[in-house]
Image (tube, rainbow, N blue to C red; front, side, top):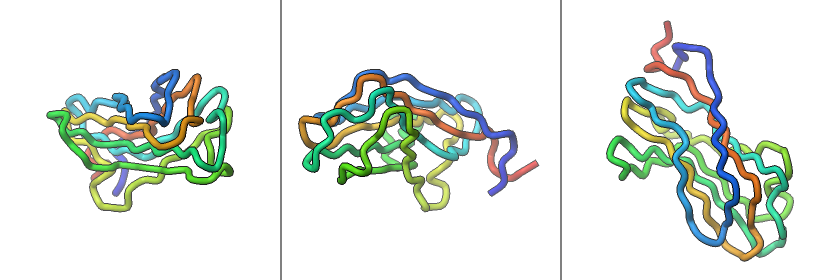
Length: 141
């Protein structure tokens, strides 16, 4: 699929977050445009604190649709080893879905980020999400 316009980036500050309960955050509204999501990254100013082998974090970007009830997983990533924890100031990239069309938002649809996991040690103090995207229907110019 070709991109219609130059890819853009938006950074959404989330702030404090924890893996002890699932919390969902709005990231990007498609508005009146078609949007192709290219990548989703997480960055934290301190990294995942209290890293231990028993704590893990899962982040999933969802297309919530126009009514907020959508469940299409656009991208996801789960760390289950200390070596894969989010480090300070190092982008932690979610893995994009390989299902055709899951990376697209139609006009009026919303992209969200849900953070959850297990263990009492997975906390963030200055988390931000970066979304790379292009506007257009993907047919190219």
